[in-house]
Amino acid sequence: MGRLAKVLLCTVLAVCLSGCAPKEYTGQIFAMDTFMQLTVYGDGEGVTGQQAMQSAQSRVYELEAALSVTRENSDVHKINGSCGQTVTVGEDTAALLGRALELCEQTGGALDITAYPAVQAWGFTTGAHRVPAGDELLELSEKIDYTRVKLEETAVTVPNEMQIDLGAVAKGYTGDVLAAHLREMGIQSACLSLGGNIHTIGTNPKGEAWRVGIQHPTTGGALAVVEVTDKAVVTSGNYQRYFEENGETYWHILDPDTASPARTGLVSVTVIGTEGTRCDALSTALFVMGLDEGSEFWRAHGDFEAVFVTDEEEIYITGGLKDSFSLLEPYQELEVRVIE
Image 1 (cartoon, one colour):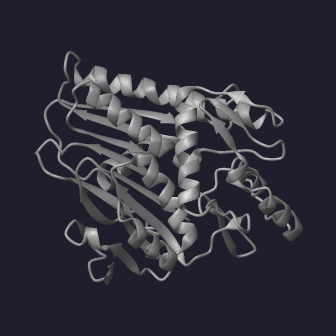
Image 2 (tube, rainbow, N blue to C red):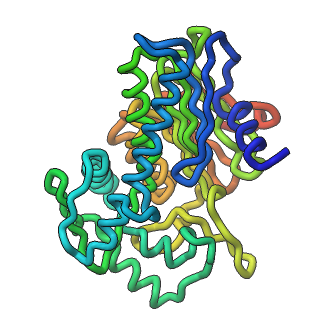
Image 3 (cartoon, one colour):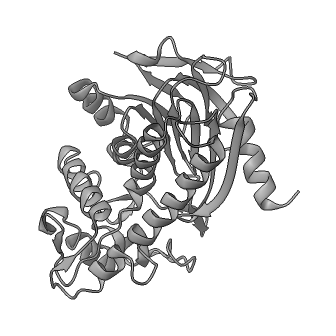
């Protein structure tokens, strides 16, 4: 079985765990550096489900063209090559950048979109992995500061020595945009699998909640399922992009304070909520915060739910998931602790 087939099989079995239904329209694409599967059930208003699904795919490519940090002529690429000059960007980029800056502030900088030079230094963008020296990390960390990014409508200014990356929120925003786009066309049931992001529209074709799988950090299979309706489910884990050197594992989720992989005792964080952009941002931010601080953040805000998995295979869920979260075989003997 080829790599693409394996990825799509895992998506079908471990992510959208619902049965097949009449008038199912499915398309697979590779965009934003990940495999995506868009599944639409039923027809819309004046469009078939197939047309709606294909329109959503086209919208993904539009967003990728604007938000990619590596694609030449993208808005983000132009910002990073602006040498400190003000750049005018498109509406999608401005909308996402504005929301990202709000989320950076709300998380106290646990999410920081200006960490891109540090991500580059570790080689996570190129695959040329390396461990930067201590003095280099100190210099990199001093240049991570989202508060220095200026946005006025569609005009963006980033200091010359800094660069941004919207990767921590781009797929979540894409899910939000696609869900709104499909609803406008009259689609009432869909499951959008965007890499580690799942965005559901309505109920599944049987009229029941979607059963979305949460991946086991080490085995790759499904650890648990969470039942959702009209929600996004986003996971960030240290197993998604990493490398090993001299017996040490380094992953792509960086602590902005140190410009190094965040080591908080967590291996994955899943966030469930109505806004994909927020879920995407918080899955990274809560990983950086760690279990205790992340739990306090949930208690303070309460507009989302979360699943924390520790490096000791401990599982913690927030109180709103008590009736919608369940472990799968062979993990049903594990203890699930509820955060209240």
